[in-house]
Image (tube, rainbow over all chains, first blue to last red; front, side):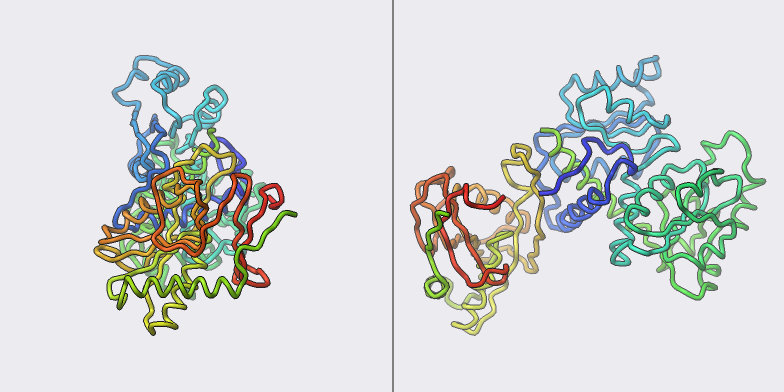
Length: 308
Length: 184
């Protein structure tokens, strides 16, 4: 019987293709569960999970919390605002205090890349990375790939363009690893200042012209401009960015093929996507959100079995 | 290899026919009845029962497949992980007479999980249990079947092996095998 090759989900980089496929197969069954009249199963009823968020989040935290509750786990939520972190407590102390209350799993978001890796070396509980700075966001990449698989039937040989602020995006990096492991071709596209210098070394294509990128791809995964992480100006203005890199309905209609439009949220309407594009039939943005719950249920379910 | 034949394909067919006759006695027109086969192995028997019932009554009884993995009580207590099969219940079970079908009844724990899993789809009027083989004296829970193909006396180290042609066997047959002889 197959099982995951890891005890923690720290990044897609550590997963094998078999791990990802196992997560998807398990997520398929959970997707059926959450469409039942009673959307809950008792699998994790003896598990307590702490959602520890040192950075803001809406979708990811709600999605994790719902996934945990659908699996009947006990859930506690922690966010750094209004906590003792402000009084100078270290990450390890904060987490060890939470674990002293008999918590089995930690879902953590942190602004420092590598924070969950550090944590996983010092604690017994399973750690799930819900985003560490500009490094990785594994569950987002899994749900993106799961959504593409659902829409196109598979990832092998498919062409995926990741468009926007690649430099500050953890979603981009996790997506690149995940898509490549599943046999897809990946391209990144954005202003030259927002594309890391050596990213070609990951074996991906780089394009600076959005029209060419859209013409090439089967799926466009559009990312948000992360102004909060930009200490310097990478482009003259948001208006100029949206003129050169914004996607609208006219641009989509002018392509000689149908492409799928994705976005990990939150969307800055009118910047990277206009409303008519985001709400068009090309877009699977809300299916991504729905799949997020099943994929996270699969991850938690499979990791819980590794903690014996 | 210690392997004893319990039912060959001819006897199995006779047994399935008898079970169907008993179902017809109790369910009359099958207006309000549905079949739920338990994943993975009960589904083959469920299909056989459904097609035999159709042969005998001309009616197609709605048949679904129920996976109990997420409801099991040995989660995190086993060496190997529990992976789920698909659940497919394409009908409403609210107020229906449900015939739960599994191939072998042993400790009764799968059936307990199945009852929980089934309740997630609604509140049936009545639930009956049909099994091909009842391993007597081995129950952990107070669960007894309504319809039994055959009662078999077994010891813990033995296993009942059910082979279906749909699963690649040369013919339908049920065997009693010593556990150490079963390839992992």
